[in-house]
Amino acid sequence: MKGDRTRYLSGILVIGMALFSASACGEENSADLPTDVPSTETEATDVPVSALSRVRAPEASNVTDLLALERPIVIVHAGGDFDYPHSTMYAYTESALGGADVLEMDVMLSADGVLMIQHDNTVDRLTNDSGLVSAFTAAELQAMDNAYWFVGGAWSDKVQPPDAYVFRGVRTGERPAPDGYTGDDFAIPTFEQVARAFPDHVLDVEIKIPATEAGEPQLDRAFAAAAELARLIKELDRVDSVIVVSFNDSVLAEFRSLIADVATSPGQTSLVNWYLAGTPVDPRDVVFQAPPVYEGIEVLTVETFQRAHDDGYEVWVWMDDASQETTEFYSEIIARGADGLLIARPTAVP
Image (cartoon, rainbow, N blue to C red; front, side):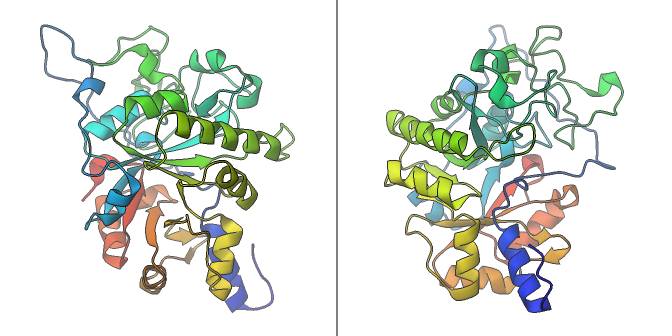
């Protein structure tokens, strides 16, 4: 939203759009990015040990304890997608082993109704295939190579020489998996797989709004995803260890109507109303999640953090530009008052 009437209204409405922008759950600028990738080498042993088996419970395993921690919380966006292949079991495992507090993920339904961990409306950016996510069954999605276009420092970079794609072919067996992993760890996972694999980690889950090939939002599919997410949270006994967010307030309302006690973050309309008029958000909203800068305007100032804190909310900051994914910038955001860092580069945590 870009108001044209006054600079004041413009600033307010841009902030409203910035907070919880659905598309900005980490749209990166891959220009001039480093192409280094963390080493996949591990100490040799006589018997291969699953990397997942080495994951230990974090300091807090439910939302209440998490928000009580007296230090900045580390939330890994899609598993830490500048360090590891976006939304893969490999990424979530490596980040958990590295000490991440919270695993962040986006969800949408496959053609046959399985809740998949998937950010984009299509599979084009990350995999060796193309097309709408909604056109593929879960089995078809999981057969894809979800690390096909990964290079260090970007979710996807399609202009690098072939040898830059160090995980390409692991999923399909054309390249050996790193020690402790299999090809399955480089597939598109389901929400259930991740939730079962990391029972002690709080999950930060965004319900995505899929669209048709013409770009028309499919709210019916988002509502169905909300219902499936609510069902799985109950079935997996994750009510107290999940935070749910969606750009669309109606999708969040649908989710809340199906499950009462899950923590949430406010949608765009609710957050705009809070900012403009101090209108209280839903009682289940415990965390604001927002970027530091949107369209060149700084939206997370010291004053913004203080106001949120005064109203009883924590603020988790997600980075909206590759230049922000540095130890120095993370430290700066913490100094401003951030309670959590939702980041792509967990290896750079200060």
